[in-house]
Image (tube, rainbow, N blue to C red):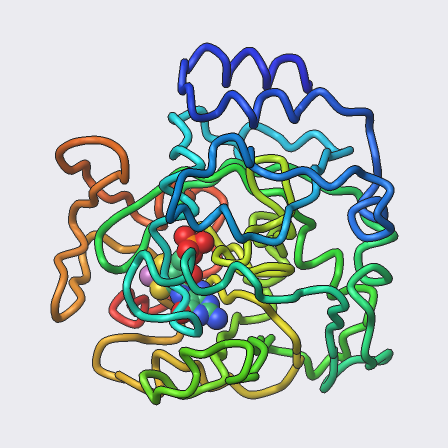
Length: 327
Ligand SMILES: Nc1nc2c(c(=O)[nH]1)N[C@H]1C(S)=C(S)[C@@H](COP(=O)(O)O)O[C@H]1N2
Ligand SMILES: [Mo]
């Protein structure tokens, strides 16, 4: 499985992925190795860092490997977005609203120690250190398309754990119909939060059956390493059939509940952003047509697919629903 992966990536001939491919040559480890520090700290080449390069003052990432092969539906063979683009062109308003701000302003953000609070409609609520949260699970790699509502997209190799596997450990009650997520609120460490550009802390949510769909993951890494801060370290949500803003970063709290949770973008601009936000080329955002998208790193535009190309896996979740609500 691992060898096949290397071939596939090598054959795409993307030179900026050299390091990524190198990093795949590691012994199997479990998710616990991520946080017990048993993997050597690696960084994306101090040799690569140029003057003014955000990598120059970045806290080093750790190399990751994954135990569980993921099936073909979870691994597109489209060309990967370069590591550089995926880590320099970001939306993470806690560190500024320009695309280059998160990489420039998040380098020193400390994510260790980190813990997650799980509360609400669960049999076993509590605050769990990240290492305890991850320890029982094997990491998986998922190569997903990511589509932002601003009409650009990327292809990213995530490393993570199915969200449903994690939620089950907390024993959801029969009243758990929705999951609500919250990002850290700490304006001292996240300077963008001192401006009221959004209703802080950033909050997102899923319906319980969406959360249990095997495509939904909590990611702890990308390109074979722990997440860069600008991509939502140490723990972020990835739901590839929805617009990027659903993929909440740097999560500190998960709450299971009976009612549909409030979400930051919907609270801030209800005419523009809904709760479902399933990728839909037929429903336009007031400012951006959703029919086509620009794949970062390539020229021109390509058509956007319903549910971002994951309709086979998720369309059944929405049978009988008004498609307009999908925005
Ligand atoms: N906490 C938080 N999460 C966030 C955002 C944000 O501003 N704050 N931006 C969202 C948006 S709009 C997108 S497109 C993706 C971008 O993820 P990436 O930078 O890893 O590509 O993160 C999402 N998650
Ligand atoms: Mo986005």
